[in-house]
Amino acid sequence: MDFIEFRGIKIRYKSIGNIDNEAVVLLHGYLESLDIWDGFAEKLSERYFVVCLDIPGHGESDVFSKVHRMDELAEAVHAVTDSIGLKKMHIVGHSMGGYVAMAFREAFQSSVNSCVLFHSTCLPDTKEKRENRSREIQLVKNGKKELIVNTNIPRAFADENLDIYSGEVERAKKIALKTTEKGICAILNGMKERPDRCELLLDDKIPLLIIAGKKDNYIPFEVIQNIQKKAANLEVSALEKSGHMGFIEEQKKSIIILGEFFEKHKP
Image 1 (spheres, one colour):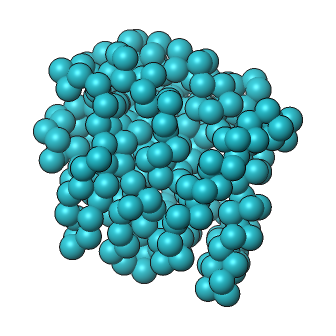
Image 2 (tube, helix red, strand yellow; image 1 turned 90 degrees about the vertical axis):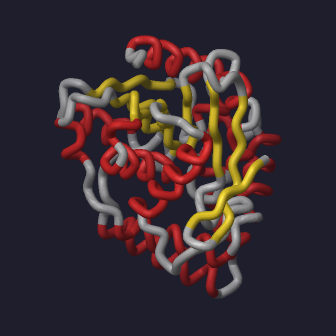
């Protein structure tokens, strides 16, 4: 593990594989850390140079503000990739990490070979979603972080996969519980404020792939299909047996999908 400084805080990251290979940056989701990619990152590193980091407010990365806006988090990602010396990369964002990936794509376009939204979208929060995030903030402030974790994490897996991946569910809960109260509130505030970035779908300079779970409890597959209609260059791959955690629920298929996409869009 390594650390860099960003806005007066520490950011934890790790890199795996041969630095001479194409680079892939993995951005985790809400209530996760770089540890969520264990196993998946190692598989990818057989062909790529893989970088994972704790997005500020998660894992062992600190909090720098009461609101962690997506463009600021994209700057944090760039600080990590710049410290490693990466000039070009494929950027893959899971859920919240996808929001950061889209902000990164917008701000650092010359650095991006391709962008992958893994169970994520370019859409802003709906009014209902913003209200739900505000409720979660209040729960955290009332000392009920564990309630949020015990509700959100199992829901991230397809209902029928809860028994099959019970060990992974518990591991994800342990990772989530390490997220500080300040970190949770900062990212919830940031997600509430994020803009609509679907106009980036009209930019065909950077290939974009959405990997979606047919049994996702957070993002109905119909939402992804509607997004696909916005741009001809957007590719969508469906995971038939996955909820919101396809890199765990269908790891092998996810690796194949990414490999084929990266190969198709080699720099």
